Length: 487
Image 1: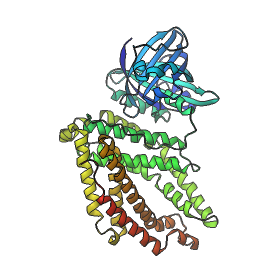
Image 2 (image 1 turned 135 degrees about the vertical axis):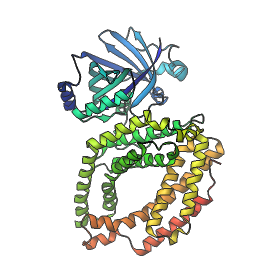
Image 3 (image 1 turned 180 degrees about the vertical axis):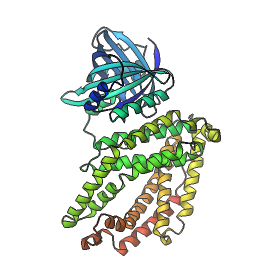
Image 4 (image 1 turned 120 degrees about the horizontal axis):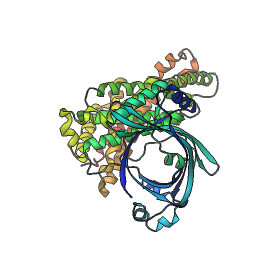
């Protein structure tokens, strides 16, 4: 059995979009068509999935194929992973030493059993495109776990020869026919999601950084995680689910902070455009989030009803922006840039890219800590606008600390990291509350409630503001006194 590398780009479309694509003529000739049923296996404790592997047995017209896949170091949507395949005679997998599974699970290998199934119709075309050859697989069907089901309608573009940039070019051509969103979930992940409670929102996944990484590898890993978090929350956003919108914005804030942290190696001819597009995308959800915060503070009554109407409009605008061609293009452009962008070979960033991740992290953390300390001096005496800048710098420092903490794994460093992050979180919370009070008047005026006497209660009393200012100053002093975990 051989280990091979596959490179693919995944897109999500609607069933109606799939029909439009097939009818468009973009995919030439008659496809091969086959019903595919794949049964996925794991232990009751999902030890295999937790280790980043999937195991399936797929029924095909030509027999059963067992496949083991490792998650690898995937760029968002662009997967490059080890894969082991073999034919099997029965419904159960063959668990021998030709795959990593026995060594990975030890005695628990005997606990492996079927956990869910994927049943799809697959249509496959092979397309020549821009001096490349691409295999296009359109899968439509569902994932089944007991009584629970989830639909599948996705396209996988697999590179058979040529440059990976052709995958993105063809993906944009598909999007011109029917809206196509970057896919970040594989079928195994879809199935495992059915085994747990329905997700309302997705927080950031653990940052798997390693000491032997370069700074460039660390950036790509961080950006991958941020992009994935955004895409997982995006389809969950609606007025009844405020947390999904919040987490989508958190993902974009973290990503934009990563752009700032790693800027010395990133400033190619695409960098600024992507920064502005990410700023636009985050801004498209800003009013909805701000009104969520105001609505939560308002008592039931006429004011609450007016806020709810403003909320409805803000969510409609946010959802329209997220559904736009521009938003879809941001995701594809970003994914391509992370994987293939000219920043990877830019002479001016060569030294920073090749720097060990730990050394780069320590310098970046020192830089942002110094900025927060200096900018926040005499915090209680500062104007709101200047305090807002301190808040933004504190946010970057917090995200940098969260990103880089896995690089500092000695017991003392881990203990100090917990204390440092707790102090940062307190400072950020206090500054965030002050910012909410400072921006509330403009927001209330913008949504037409500045003449409503009841709205004054949402602005906070002078005593409340002063208490928060003092708490923020105290939180900053506490942060400055907290030992650095990276030194």
